[in-house]
Amino acid sequence: MFDPVDIAVKRLDHAGDLPLPSYETSGSAGMDVRAAEELVIAPGERGLVGTGLAFAIPEGYEMQVRPRSGLALKKGISIPNSPGTIDSDYRGELKVILINHGAEEFVIARGDRIAQIVIAPVQRGNLVMVDDLDDTARGSGGFGSTGV
Image 1 (cartoon, rainbow, N blue to C red):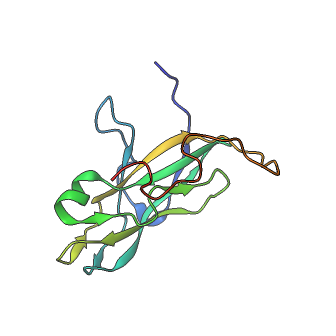
Image 2 (cartoon, rainbow, N blue to C red):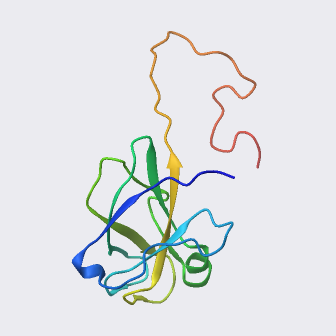
């Protein structure tokens, strides 16, 4: 088993008594987050939904914001920049961008589960300028070059 990472969380005034994000099952990778406000998103439109929570994510980690599969399947609701990244140095309110790909208005009530968050380690890269790259079987083929 792995050791959990402590994440400091601040409940903002408009979060009220909403429950903190939590894992719904013992095998869940993500914690469900809830809306701290009401909003209606028309078909084809986007909306920004506050959660009423701010986090202090430890250096070396990120918080990924991902869609909830049930909302995507049943209502056509997704996150356009999925997964959204919350960096370790951000201390503002977690807000979720939702997009309505469905055919009907999507009504968000305060307390509705709107997304999930996953805590993930970050590996930073060091870019090294070179004149040539090594050869691979795939080469520069992209955008469907490996199959139909």
